[in-house]
Image (cartoon, rainbow, N blue to C red; front, side):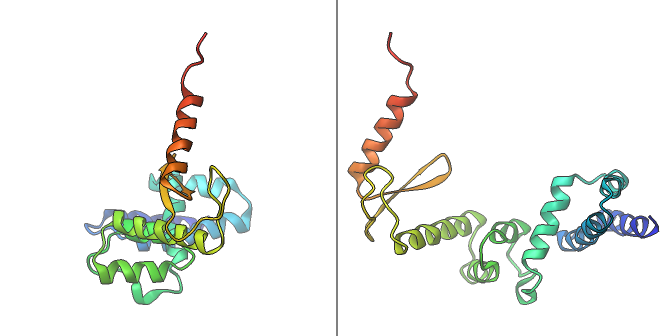
Length: 176
């Protein structure tokens, strides 16, 4: 428990500085989670959260981002990039690639997310994805329609439109 108190004190001191570092928070969070996992004692994590006033969600998020960039030291704390840039890129198979592109292109977080989404769609097309509506193979000229925050691929604007009409019919109240 003494080690936990030391970690909690370090964490509180980071929170108390003018320039709070999510990177430092993430490193400590990784240590706390390692202690928690080694001991199999849920009380360790709860005691740390209570002592620091941190939320479990933020603790896990900071540790996840730091872990994602652990082998990418050359791209940490690049000027012009926020923690949100790193958090967004952390979900990609190659976060260092996306952070570098965001830095070079001076992208906003939204632009980074859009570029990552576009790359996912391109990969699906290259892997032979099928149209959501008619199941034919998607060509390079595919139309991308976003529904429920998921990328749906269609072979043509016509298929996309018909799909949306079918969804609208399904969601409208049944006539009696």
